[in-house]
Amino acid sequence: MDTERIIELLNIDFRHELEATMMYTYNAFVIEDCDLSRLTEGIAADEMRHMWWLADLITKRGGRPSMEIGEVDYLGEDIIEAIERQIQKETEGIEEYERQIEIIDDDEVTGVLRHIVDEEKRHRKEFRERLERLR
Image: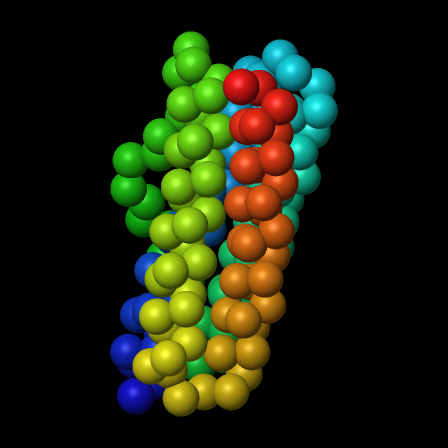
């Protein structure tokens, strides 16, 4: 795979991490449950760290991180729905990273993506545990 395509894929990931950071940060501000709010805030910080790692990979390969984002699905009135959406966001990220790991032939990139997948799986597990407590 050529470098330009790798940069393109990494920018997709970067934008998804940016969207997750924005969603989780906002949700942490408005969630009244302290434990869930602090968990969401901590995961937002993890997502921002993922952005740093991806930006590093992008710039090392001659690209620039893209700050263009899609629609961010902020928390409405239903906290269960919000946590389900956060779980969905983590699952979508895991699936995309795993797909990219299979097609990218750059060991540094796939190593970072594997590490991010491990963290995203932990995030999803923690959100699922909190969701079960709410039901």
